[in-house]
Length: 267
Figure (spheres, helix red, strand yellow):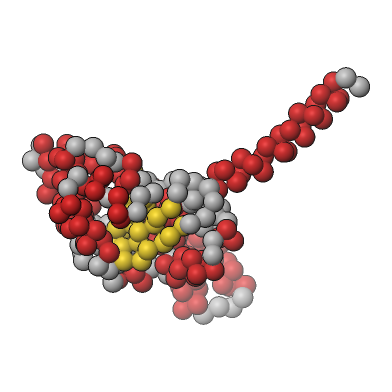
């Protein structure tokens, strides 16, 4: 018994040193099962390694999701794809496969407020992470401020390098950023830096014809659009506002609930 205890102690210590927590926690119970089922050493070892690999993959995906800053409630499961035209549904299903990242293609989502632009891009981002891709989500206004601060501290190059480590950069609500020229210059610098190096997933409620409101002059506007559309997929969400539809559905139900409450009160 002492010899067996020493064996387990040494094995647990080595697995801890090798940073294999799942194998360290499971090897004894799996060994008992392997004996009962007369499994070979190789089958037993394969099952332990499979469990360790699966646990590591799960932990890695969880870490990537945290680092992405994605709103996790905006998933593919929580989006009603039935609201979209067939062609758009097919586009979304194709994009979640992730091959566009290998081609350094961009995704540009256009539509009115409430049409689901942000939700779709976040859902795609989550599916990409589950394929072990690095994704970062940011609001455009906050991104511009970070870029501006980095520039003022002579650290813009360092920030751009850090952002380049993400295969997909989701920039939400670019149309709401209509600030001064200096702020738009740093945004253009980022887009130019990522051109053919990494994918940009961008949402906007303004068509290209109105982007001069964002980039302030025709030349910068044309250059920004040119870099974005050279390799891109455009999602046109010409659908009714999800929030408006949801509010309309809730209104009759709320009215019925209130009527029921009044009825109960006076009867």
